[in-house]
Image 1 (spheres, one colour):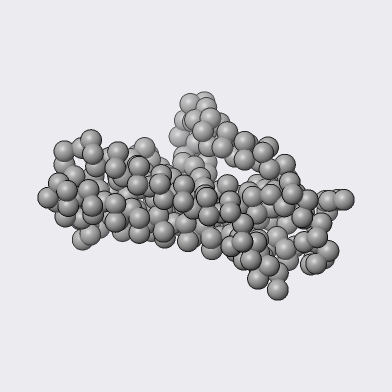
Image 2 (cartoon, rainbow, N blue to C red; image 1 turned 90 degrees about the vertical axis):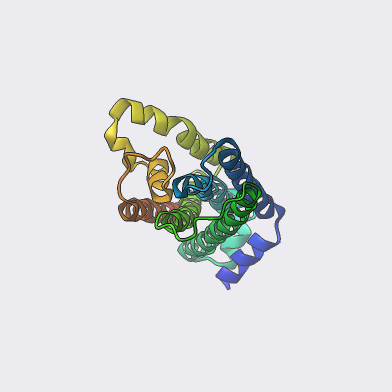
Length: 241
């Protein structure tokens, strides 16, 4: 019943649809930017750099995860949720499961849009997609997983910082500013921070010194699990009245 309620909340509100649409626009814009300004668009590496924008959609998946919890606190519906399902840990786990799947859907949709957009650009340049490349599909798979894991992390952030604006600002501030500053201060250890791991998982061009893809995914999943545990422990003890 709890899972059904979370699915219904996700499908009957406009914000997830807006985030979903914005994510696809970002993919189209990113791929267009890469393929429009490069000459070697038939090269597998160029096409991989283009479709790597699938991973950047994870920012929207992260916000979706934050809103799944902090959004209910903002609109004061969280009390009704806990009255309906007094087991708060069960509520958090339901939000975590549903939102992670939603993040996966964001990633899969972004992959489809990315391949379609790339195909249009390549056809216009009399080139073909390098679908046989050994690098293209791992990048696509990594981008999809990045979306799912960031959605899960978002649920944890939203549960820990229940102020919606504060949670989104903190998350985006970390990704846009803090990780860059930490990287300048500590150097190589910064490759184990969340966005850097996602970049390695997705094989973004900027992730030249990151860990192997499988290890990046494993550590990022560890972050998601840690946030889930912290969110559950915090939620069951918090007074929401």
